[in-house]
Length: 315
Image (tube, rainbow, N blue to C red; front, side, top):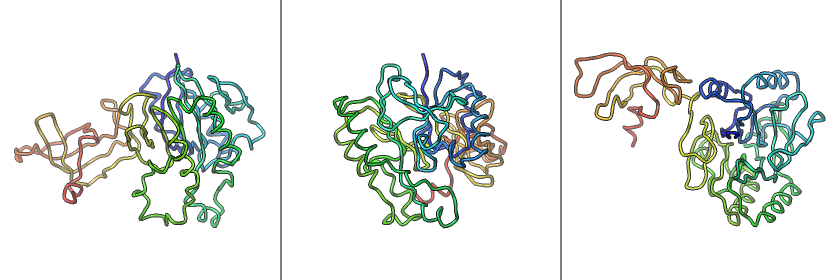
């Protein structure tokens, strides 16, 4: 039986997935679902082909949801359609393990129904156009695509197990993350508004999305970025590649269930270590709280048990 894993935007950087494969004994029967902006069809030249060849060598297959920073497969002549787990996907003969979901298709994943709804608005659209960077005019779902999605869900009596999307309904949008960076008045939220309407009618167990470059959990939804989890499970299997703290930062940390430490970060292991590979690790020089005489180095300290002194002072 295939296993299905989920992660957020990659933007052409797959180190977290390569690391995952090394430690999880994956196979081509397993699938990594990328929730948009995989970055596989971004440059539209030999650089994309080089990346695809690199991914072909992994013991893993992919299902990519369409993001806003990539070309749609049906605009690329080398892509064809085929039936996969009960729904249509796009693929290339040269790269059969790199699949791209068609918006509105409903897939049977080990007896669970999942609908794919890709696309989003680029908040940096004008910046990209001004600098001549890749920008794709059909980044958001078209009217025809929206009609197809709704028709498909209506045939399912508006009930599925999972939704895979790039952006999300407005009710899940993490607005505070961008309020100081972008002029949100200039952001086209028509896709999010439409997804809000979808969510209001749809019965689902979990809505998974990317786009916002963070990891957040809601009651019935989850935003993923560098974290990787297994479909339908609670908690992350891996959360590496984006350290929260830096070398030279003073932190508090848990040494055990009964002991806490205080010290300065000496080294950051952004992909963990052999002893601890589920999340970012730190080497910290410091003391056990209450025993300041014994200064030493603490190795393989997991990020989830570390807190910045600055964070504590601002709470």
